[in-house]
Length: 527
Image (cartoon, rainbow, N blue to C red; front, side, top):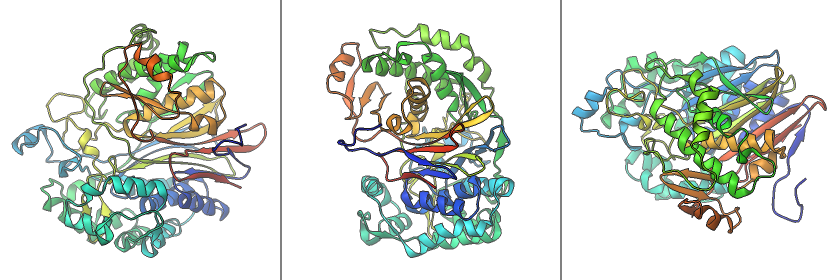
């Protein structure tokens, strides 16, 4: 139980259904859907759509989706809703265009958005309520306006300079020439119309007709290589989840091209080390996590890509030999040099999870990648494009090299925990490159150390990136010199690291236990 004399957030408890998201309106919308008789997938789609309006810097229908679905009947399904590069996108074409690396503001960072196709597939296969009913709360919010919450306002102000670059983006996202402040009302009536068109026509409402015309006109005006055929060919796909066992629980992730493999590798590498010991010092926990991150992310950046284009040795990377090899390289008293940074820093996305009365569970992540994605907005449809393609490499031969119809390495990873065939917990940790580390830390705290969900979410975080080990302000100041003595270059994090949501199913008591990150504006709520 938390100390009620200190600031904090209580764990949520419920019986019949629960939603956890990063925004109060998304959580409330999902809960309304559950209370109206919808199932977990209905609620997840409705909540995700609201987040596209309420957190436009983090997510949108111009982005991508990954989801894990654990139906009450058993098993875990994975859906990859990531977008593909245009058919004309090749390393040679990038070189001819003078593109050495693909930056977040580049139109070549825009792969075909996969979110709407994924929503429609998940709705058709697993939802029970009409699509128009699920999308209308978001459409109404976009039309009438959404009050800007504190964390959203903070992030909006931080991204204002990028939003000034293009007239359409400036007009849409800097109303009155400035970022909205806390409590201001933000409207996007063009997005409202697009959402209602999707509600009527399904995926054709986005990938065909006037919305497509607007999207292609916008992309081509910035030099994009996208065509009508590229959008028509975009399809999500069900894939087989990958998994490892940690402390008797089975942890499921989506396979590559997502980085869920890195989360599982971290768990395997750290199992049985001082970081995993209940009596470990905080210095040991942070040090071992940082060292394992360097090694696992080095493997990730060198080997992961779209499995339709490159062979990713998943079984070998999840094997005990790989874990032992990486573990053997970690010294408890000194830090390793960082691998050469290959993936650019990135920290923005949304994550939500839902469990319904029948115990169907959804772990759902929807993202634009960087804050406000590519900062390229289509004015007639109100769509902001993501920048997932910035994760591509432009040199030929690399597993993550850009190619026609290829999907880039993705950071967004929903998680799911089962035990003896029963769903235990949908969970996720936002934060771009941090996400795999966040998954490992959260699971080691909950499944390993037995911390309460909210206590684990609240715990201060650390992340090593670009040669710097950054610590949130919640860490004891004495930790900094202790880590410097082991050779780390340590700094205080400039802002919060990531954000998390989780819902645990207590089958013995017949209840749901939820947590939502105080680093965001959201909440876990059930009934």
